[in-house]
Amino acid sequence: MEPDYKIKIENVVASTQIGENIDLNKIAREVKDAEYKPKQFPGLVLRIKEPKAAALVFRSGKVVCTGSKSVEDARKAVGQVVKIIGSFGIPVFENPEVKVQNIVASADLGVDLNLNAIAIGLGLENIEYEPEQFPGLVYRLRDPRVVVLIFGSGKMVVTGGKNPADARKAVEKIAEELTALGLM
Amino acid sequence: MEPDYKIKIENVVASTQIGENIDLNKIAREVKDAEYKPKQFPGLVLRIKEPKAAALVFRSGKVVCTGSKSVEDARKAVGQVVKIIGSFGIPVFENPEVKVQNIVASADLGVDLNLNAIAIGLGLENIEYEPEQFPGLVYRLRDPRVVVLIFGSGKMVVTGGKNPADARKAVEKIAEELTALGLM
DNA sequence: ATACGGTTTATAAACCTCTTTAAATATGGA
DNA sequence: TCCATATTTAAAGAGGTTTATAAACCGTAT
Image (cartoon, each protein chain N blue to C red):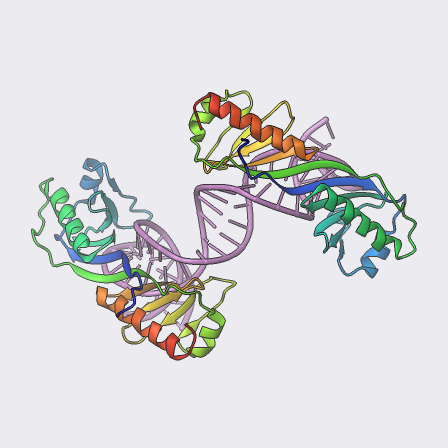
């Protein structure tokens, strides 16, 4: 019987290219949910309500989409971006290839943890634990290549993955390691 | 049947005079739990472990004792201060009169509250509610003369009282007022 | 000369900001 | 080449916000 670590995807970052020379000034003027301050940042921020997301749209036509709760939602949000921008007569690709770049997930081992003991038990090469600076212990895994924030409450944040399975593998791996060390 | 508002005294501030010309430098040198930085503040801070408290000791012999959880503990803490300082051959009064200057208590009405409605219902003369600045509604009572911080959770902080009954009276008074206004 | 604000100590309440991590994107500055 | 700008998100801890109160000292203002 597999334990339930309550793994939940919290944020998906995806990138794509929807066109080749986007007039950001025109979008900023026409779209209420758009923010464009080129002096501060070269991308236009376009917020999508459903599914909830935020897209950074660049003049090159490249787009970064953040804030989605699933890979599927990220694709849908990109679809919305294409629809909105295309509605102003700006040439856009109808079905751009969407590449997932980062997935952030939360998880819960369900038990309180002694982070000092863990820092020592897991070895110091891949661990950073500076409680004065940040209450979470930072653990960098090689396979899958992700970074996990481990908290005293047993909760964790897995980040850096390219697909949902990375988070699951990381959580299971850590649970095994901590069990083997008698730390959970 | 009287409702239980979980009234709890959280802090007692008391003042007294234990002597007439205290050598604060001597105390600072001899006592580990003492802090004395005259450039920053003219009082020496003496921390008491049991009952937990902090005393500000002044050259005049006057003392302010804070942090106690009851009036009795405040008196005991003063007794400890007298004992510690007297042990260095510094002349002190054995049984100084202790005056309670402030009591802070917490309470819980046990129901969620609509602070906007309360601010209007209780009248604006004695009310301050600026949620951007601080989440609690500030209500100044005339009798007893205390100040009550009221939170949306139903929890409250009563401060400014000189005896424990002030907190109880204030909580009961507010509960009556809110009940009469149909706000709880 | 008086008054006020600040310094310090303790304390509850609930809310804010910040801290850290990953990733794509494009621009400026050192 | 690296850092900063911007976007998003979870986790938990720190510091700050407000209120009352005594004490004694400083600076500023009237």
